[in-house]
Structure formats: structure tokens, C-alpha cells
Length: 639
Ligand code: SF4
Ligand code: MSK
Image (tube, rainbow, N blue to C red; front, side, top):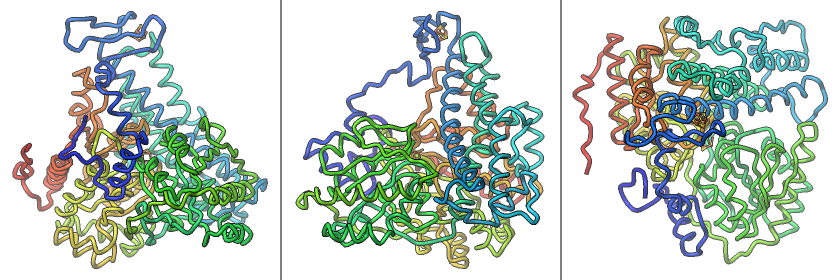
């Protein structure tokens, strides 16, 4: 077995472990089985040393120096590794940004009056964001502002602008730095297309130049496509406020129609929530013998729903096959991103119906009910009805829900954090200055079967809060930490004295749920607000990022824009760059002199917590704040 496993268990989560054992007993193939069958995975690809960008190839570079050191075209290891990384970042940035565009189109439909499925939910944010885009909001109806804002935001995808509009939120020194480096993101689509152009055979053959453009592309995601996704989702569906709901496989109900909402886009799931309230559909469910309709979330669609509507969370990335094995899931509705094709096969072993909904994300074997924002609610009802129909096919003897759900808080948008602080970042800044809180870390990203499920997230978070570092979480990390009980105010008991006191005074948990993967932009906005408040740049602050169990191309784009924005980031899974010492050196060290932050790779969360603590204390020293000598923080030894 690959990766960091200190014991034989594949998951740190109790509900998952039980289902994994069940899968083995019933010979249902899961992600862990398939990983094992893939081993040993290709060494060239793992090092980033293979290229199939043209048909003179495919080519590979021998990492030991005995075999070929150049592709047929003459590209060396540095160029091949950099090109591969650039394409990965572009794929991730494109996924986020295309998601943003889909939401934006819904805003445009609202503004044009050709849908009644959605409406403006947060008028204040609509006006604030419209003003950022230079739109006069005086004496204008919100419908008209929505239309004009959507139109202006669409321009940020194109080639007409020299810089993205949300860059006005970036601290001035960082904007100037990006300008000097020529990495100011322009059009979102433009930067992504340019990656594909540059990495075509015979275009950009300088690894540094390729990597700088990769940073620019990732910034077009973080301060562009993803930020548009977050802000427009808030405008349409409401800016999250703190709420308490529940998490783990125990949120499924044996006596109700269970419907899981999986993927990333909140557009469809929002109408399904409303459809499930329909009295006729509720009656239909009762006629089938169910007590009602129970909606649960998975992955980031689940995060979106939990943040805004308190819908319970069934699980994160590696739970998506296991939730079907409860035998109680009547339908899994998928939109896009992070949905394993295997869910259709696992569902085939049960009565569960997988329903795909986006024409750009079809799944062979699934039922396809195409989503159309203009007929949102009608489609939502059709989907809920399909789940109710499936309830009759459930086999009661195969229903296995035994875990009790765990309470967790969600809904910590920047607005609600600032409100909890009394309307200004000042109390947080004061607590950091005094040393009660040493700094803050974002623990984000996916699960990956190469890392013990949820172990990376929860171990790292525990160590950080124990040492008075406030943790913010998004994506699958939020689910892992919520299930582990770390996201209720009572978890402050596990924190160091300083953090415990602050959490107690504010009534907040030591680990704050800031949303889905696109909502990592909320973390950027918060970091920028802190830097602006102090009149400094983001890289000067005692902040860090970590993605202990990342797997996706989107996570690489996130890591790149976080580092390019000035935040040191530790990855728990090795990216495929180790075939080029020069690329590794640039990303792990050289970037410090370029953007003031760099990457580290550390699979053991006990060790990564030390790297983060050392970094935060170093930043405190540089700011002249009371600090622990970073060198005195001991690195745990291997067993
Ligand atoms: Fe080989 Fe160069 Fe073609 Fe890549 S671009 S496949 S290294 S010839
Ligand atoms: S769902 S991108 S596995 S966090 Fe956003 Fe989780 Fe990663 Fe998907």
C-alpha cells in the first residue's frame, strides 16, 4: 500500500471503516481496491517525466541518467515537468472557472427575467459587488443590477481587460509585485488558453517562464473564476451565516426517502431543496410508506448546502461509494467534479439510482435528467419524484445505518466572521499580536486513497489548534474535521489556552467552516482584509495553507494561487514534479524570493504541523511580535 499509513486501517473515520469492511465481505470494488490494482504506478508519470503532447512521442526521460534525457523534439526534464504542471493547473483553474460561469449565466437569466427558478437573495452583496464592477446602483431595481453585473463579470472571462476586477481587493504591494513579475491575471479564459498554447510543442521552452505563467493562470482562478462562483452564489442563494447541522453516514434515515446531492454546483441542489418541500411530493413519499424526504450532501455540493441551509453532510470524496452501501440511498444526484464514474457500478449492486444532470458531465449507465436553469424547479421536482419511486425498490435487510451523526457548525463566510468579531478584524489582529492566537492556517482540499482517509486533515488540525493556531477549512477537509467533532464550540477544549479563551468569548469553534473548494476565495479575501487592515502584504502575515490529502487538478490550481498570493503551503501528497530538480528547487525555495511564499511536501501530518508552526513563528519574529524560536519546535522522529 502506498502513502502514509501508520496502521492497516484505510480510514480514520469510524463510519467509513465499517463500510470498507462490508465492501470487502460483499466483494464490492472500491477506490482502495482499484489503487492496489494500479500498483506499482508508472514511475515516469509520478515524476512528471512523461510527455504525450505530440505524435512524435510519447516520450519519457530516464530519471537515472542512463536512458534518454530528451524527448524526440529535444525537450528536457525541466521543460517536460513544467509543461505538465502548467497543464494540470490550467485544468483545475478551468474547472473552477467554468463552474463560476455557469452560476454567472444563472444570474444573467435572473436579470433578464427569463427564469423564475432563482432570485436575488442577498441584495446588499449584489450592490456591493456591482459597485466594485463600476456599476451605478442608484435608483436601479435589483433585477437590472443583476443583469448589468452578470454582463460585466462575463467580460472578466474574455480578453478585453488588462486585469481582473476583483484585483481591487488585493493589497497594493502584491498587485505591484504581480505587475513587476508580469503575472497580473487578465481574462480568465485567456490565461487558460494561453497555457495550452505555450505548452504545445515548440512554444514556451523555458521552465521558469512556463511556471510564471502557471501562477498567473492560477490567479485567474483564485481572484477570478472561483471568486465569481463564490460571490454570485452568495448573491443568488444567500451569504452563509453560522448554523449547526450534522455529519457522517448516520445522517441517512432508514424510514425516509434519502437523496444525496453530490458534486460542486449549488444551482441544481438549491432547487431540489425547494422541490423536496413540495406538499404533493411529500404526500407521494408517505404513500410509498416513507416518513418523508431526507436530503443529504456529499463533497462540495454538500458543503454549499450545509453552509447556507444547514443540510446534513453524508461525507467527503472517499465516502461517495460507501454511502451507497448503506442500502438506504434511493438516489444520488450528481452535477460535476469529483464524482467517480464507479458510483454507477456500486449503485448497480443496490437499488440506488444515479441521476446525472449536466450535459457536460454524463455518466454511462446513469439516468440523465438535463438541468436547465430556466426550468429549474420543474426539473428539481422530477428528480425528487425519481428518488421517491426508487424507495419502493429498497431491500430493508440490506439497510445498514449504525453511526450516530456528529454535530458540526458551518456558515463562516468572511462577513459572518467579521460580524462575530464585532464588525472589524481588529479583535483577531489584537489576539494575534498578543500571541493568544499565534496565527491562522487553512487546511483544505480533498481525500486521496494514498493517504489514510481523513487522518491527514484531522491530525494536522488537532496539532494546530493545540498550539493556538486558528484553523479555517473548506472542501473535504471541512467534512473530515466536522465528523471528528472539531467544529463545535466545545472543541475549543482541545485547543491551547489562548485559542480556547478567544473561542469561548466569541462562541465559535476553533475550526471554522468557510465552504466549498471554490470558497477558498473567502480565505483569500480574509487574508487580504487582514493585510489591508495592517497596511502590509499577505506574505508578511503569520498564515499558512495545507492540503494534506489533495488529489485533484483543482487543488493544484488552489495551491498555486495561494502561494502566488503570499501564503506558504504544505502538500501532503507528492506532486509529479520530482523529475526536475530545478522545478522542485524553484517551487520549494526560489518562489520565496519571487512571491514571498513557497511550497513544502510532507505526507506525515504530525511533521507538517511542525513545518507550519515554525513558519508562523518565523513570521511573528519578522513582525516583531512575541515569538517562539522556530528552531526550538522539535520535528517528530519516524517510528
Ligand atoms: Fe515528445 Fe516533445 Fe512531442 Fe512531448 S512534445 S511528446 S517530448 S516530441
Ligand atoms: S470536493 S476538489 S475532492 S476538496 Fe470539492 Fe473534495 Fe477536493 Fe473534490
